[in-house]
Length: 258
Ligand code: NAD
Image (tube, rainbow, N blue to C red):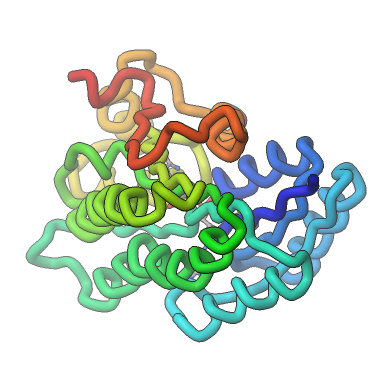
């Protein structure tokens, strides 16, 4: 049976890595996220060509509940079900809390946290009715521990871990699992974009930020890869993971073991 997955924020970085792993398993996939329309179409067509499943794209903005509802309904209409929902879209802003721009706070809470409430509330009834579903929330090591200057992000990621546990309890008897994955640093555009701001906030060079701030937290001294996260999400989406629910799984080179 061909499963259908939605991965929010999958035009780049970790989301795209998860899509590539799912496509290799022949799943039907609904891509989502921003970017150049021609580049997105080229990505969609390339994935569609290599996968046994069908790869489509929906451009829902994760700050807009009505567009999120349309993402879920369109996928259900196109493929007959949403079996796997990966809430991955996210942004970052680095600033001391007293200077944190209000619009950035609101956007991070909306995209990194509230969007998962909106996707889940729309997709869960169908999963429960079919007695099978997998919800994977891409949280962060920052869903388990904090770092300075990331108040909105750490708040949203702790919130998504709480949402994960709550929905896991509500859906446990219906064959639906809900888990959070908590990556350490992955060298994606999101991380590359915050290096200059972190350098400014801490008075460091960009190389010092990579070595002394980002990888200082990871005992392996290696960035986590999108392939590693794709492999974990593939397992969580499988029947073998049926008894794993309500977890927040660190994938962080040992960071939160400190
Ligand atoms: P990225 O910037 O490479 O990708 C973010 C994706 O989200 C893109 O596809 C972008 O278009 C999409 N997006 C942004 N705003 C959106 C909106 N309003 N509506 C729909 N899509 C939107 O970043 P990434 O590093 O791949 O991050 C993906 C997730 O992983 C985020 O939730 C992030 O917090 C989390 N994460 C990243 C790291 C890391 O080190 N990169 C670590 C832990 C957790």
